[in-house]
Amino acid sequence: MKKTPLIALCAALSVFVSPLFATSYNYTSTGTWESIVSASSQILAADNIYLNGGTAMSISSDVGEYLSRITIGNNSGAASLTLTNGATITVKNRVYVGDRSRNSASVLTIYTGSSLIMSTAGTNLWVGNAQNGTNANGTLYLRGGTLNIGQNGLLVAATTTTDGAVTSTGSIYMTGGTFVGGSSSTNITVAGSGANNPSSSGTAIFSLTGGYLSLSANNVLVGANGAAKADARLTVSSLMDKARFEVASAFMLRGTSSLTIDFMAGTDWKNKNAILEIGGTGGTLTLQNTAAITLNFDGFDVWSGAATDETITITVISYSTLNKAAGATTEVVGLDDTLFEYSNLTWGATGLTIDITFKGIPEPSVSAGLLGLLAVAFVARRRR
Image 1 (cartoon, helix red, strand yellow):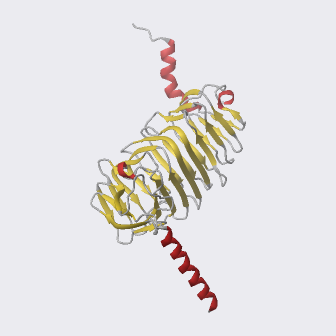
Image 2: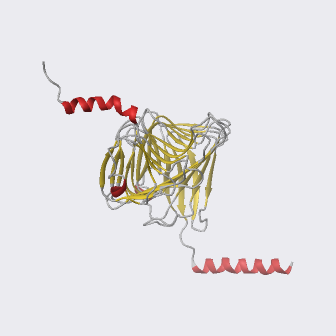
Image 3: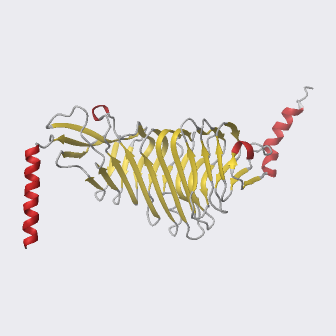
């Protein structure tokens, strides 16, 4: 009879035994993860790592893989975790940024050269999760480096409770780096998961101003349906290297939700793909009656090599199909009408496009004449 090595037997038994002896590791110290957490006892799949209220930790090396959940801030208050100087942490369970962390924001920050990797399917990244009668507030800053959520979902300002009114606030600010992952069997919800409890509310900001984002989902749900109180704001800058959502079903703006597209100076407009790309096997963009789209030209400027009266066509959003309710609005703001004019704002079969014409720089004499007319009008107004 072949004998099973003792080490292998212990490893097999640990799969069944560890959930029975789950441990919660509650940390209240401020310092480095390497000196505080990594020095602790072995952490198993059923365990929980809590960075409790007031805790501030940083990681600056590869600390390996953790089987447990990691919670940054809980019902004892807010906490923070910062990844810097080439830090890497791999997590095989859920990650919470602000789980019942009351009203102060718990914060996860990832800097250039650092990585957080979620390696196991069936878990999620939560940024703001209110439940059990306790509010939540979470903020994620991706300032460089890599955030890879694996084959998991993303929930921003979630209210996963049915017991009383709670408020969840969640914010993601991406200014650089790489944000990837997701799966066609999971959802991305931005203040959209509280429909089962209309007395609760979620407020979410998802701001994409720089870097590379490519996320997959069954649905991307921005805002909530029905009576649920949700304020969801998504902003996408033309300076993103890529902002793409691969959806098996649809990308939806629901309830009180807004999408702002920022047209920024420094963009290579003649070689730019769509600012926001909706792709995948579904690729549908759904805009409900209350959805608001704003095309913001406050940061726009003359493009390289522009000639007077030259017109460029910009693809704002690309999609496979469009499902746009009559009440959904599209507004153009901030365009300098002394230099530019827009036309042909079109929701087409596969994309939203707009034409921008450069009028040329006003001649000094014209500018002086305009100033003179303004001065005369001002004096005439004062004499009334």
